[in-house]
Length: 192
Image (cartoon, rainbow, N blue to C red; front, side):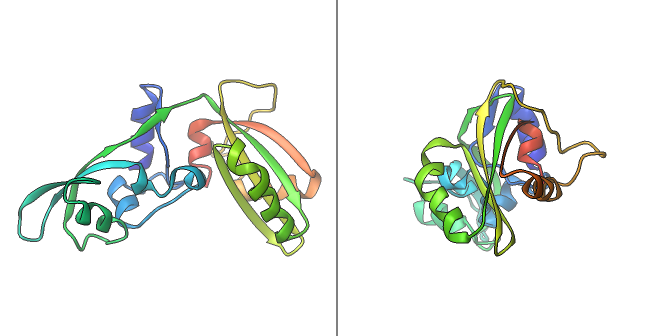
């Protein structure tokens, strides 16, 4: 599951490039279901971070598939929901982890303004990008940058007393046009 994968990679100061936001989605489920996340604008779908699969075919044969070996199966595996065989192992690219994600919430009054913001600045400067449309005139774009520290309030999302992420964003969007805070990386990745 994603939470176990992240817990394990964090022990080595590493993270997968794309982590699905629900902790119990499995690595195989993320590949078979064509998962993506707030870092996908930069790294693609979860499967785009994979280098190799080991698959047991319907005939019972074990094969390795990569971009260069059995590439038809490698590329076809994404979104196949298990129809090409049983996925038994994955080689996955990792990146350096940081302690926090610095989130910046920016409000917009139209979808056009929000899209313009994302096109002009977010793609180059940020590690994570998502938006929440509360109504036609209240759109919040959330950008994230991986950081070790910063002089901002710290917000968690994994404690039983924490607000749900979208409720937290809703409250911020009603009170402030722009806001920044630090979120521990594990909390950010599983904020929903």
